[in-house]
Image 1 (cartoon, helix red, strand yellow):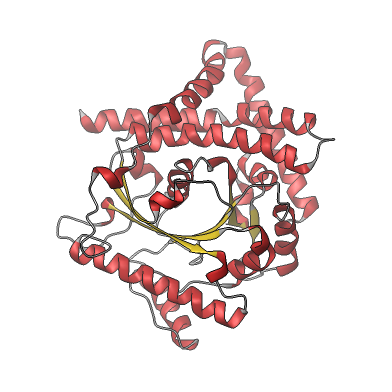
Image 2: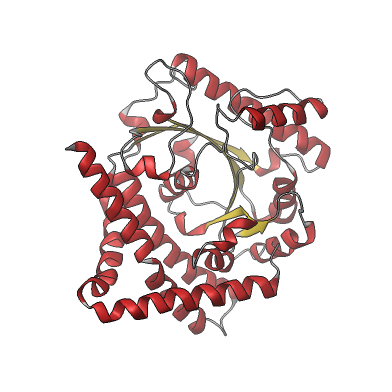
Length: 365
């Protein structure tokens, strides 16, 4: 019975999250038109509000509906106490990692300000591919990195009136313990650069993070160093297995998340490129030690318990349910009136094609 209910939850979540996308895009397009003659930061304020609404609905499914327990250690209390502009550096294990960003940001009240440095292949996502660019996300090509393109995108975020969490996963690709060829290639890259190979992470790439820091430093308050471990990434024998993906999450195959957050004041981050490269690898060496200790002993830091009420930072339902209800109600007419479904499908097709054209013309990466 439990498995059946999990499948119902998964199907319902997929229908609502994807089915709401065209309605969300229409709301955004309306605001884009209204704000055409306003300052860019005014447009961004409205867009961030809409993005916050949508992502709160996503969190409703991934945290509240799944009964997920999320525990925070490190500088969580400080981070959640005030809003900041930050560069967010996370470890990369799963397609759920962007949900982790949501879970951290929503507890600061900054979920609308999340902007990702993303693989160029994500441009192909219907509706979302174009919208992410309009939201301030930055596409980059692996193997054909164009520095000028990234710098141009970062210039937009330099406006001091635009609040932003610029999110980068320096590993570039998800780490999985069974990806032997990828791990071997990563270790060789570390050896070739005189760096220590990592056990639980891929060797981080530093270039994108350095460019973001160089461009945005004057607007940044801190770097958030975020390390997450999923309970579903360990089997019954306490052996590490691949972390659960989005589908697994909604099917209830992960019950707890452990997130260690470290706030690094921006003035403590080196400005020299060579020093930053070493700094970045040291950052991931510390992450690696945290994760190794977790898998070996069950904690990130000695004498710091994970599963306490103090570390839980439970998210109130009022933070997610209103957005969930709004998008469900906006989707309801499509269920009740079959004639609207054709218009809905046409809106998806037209918006997607127009989005692809914009991205192609602008050649964003």
